[in-house]
Length: 270
Image 1 (cartoon, rainbow, N blue to C red):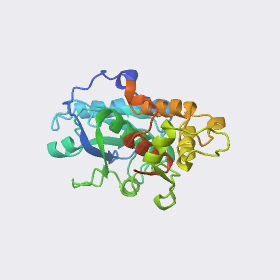
Image 2 (tube, helix red, strand yellow; image 1 turned 180 degrees about the horizontal axis):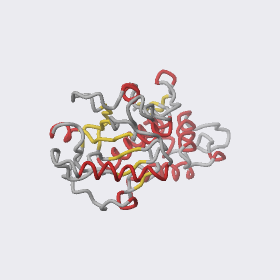
Image 3 (cartoon, one colour; image 1 turned 90 degrees about the vertical axis):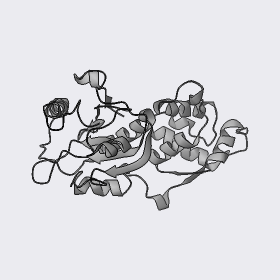
């Protein structure tokens, strides 16, 4: 995840928006105006301009940029209000309380960039998972138009939302391998000797392949055994999700394993 915090691109380190403990999920937005594609070094300028326009809107009386996060066409996530801050973008106080808001730097057809590139879809997925990990966002992923009369987030992006907001290239649900959490935990805590045992449980290799794809485990260590190296790699995945201390012990749990499966194309049962 390429995340740029507020202070790193010139915003106050902490948003003035009202605190919020958790949400039911995340709503996806777009700009709703023409948006010409641009070099990556100009994207932070545009995000600052969005914030300036929101602060200048006396009718809405925004306390900060309206979105919790914004994602450029290159896949970078810019922290807006951030986790645990009520959004100002969903239309009403009740809608703002129920879902965070993530905005794609994407415009209307005929005026530049209007179809999200793969990098941007990955970034949107990163932002959703970040808000889950750090802001207690629930599993719902909806469009702005769900519950509010608007065309946002545009037809192309809304189609992606309705398909479950998958990462580009994700395996269709019907073809996904299945990992049994109970058997995986058993393999992680009582892994048998490798001698004469090709794998301790087939799902271990699925999880190891996912950790490899996340850059957390070397190819040479994908061996079907949930040993020390795999535990260390899984602990790194837990820390990436925001777990600390004993919670990042390298032993899979339902939430962390489900998020790994969502990112890397397998289903979890328990």
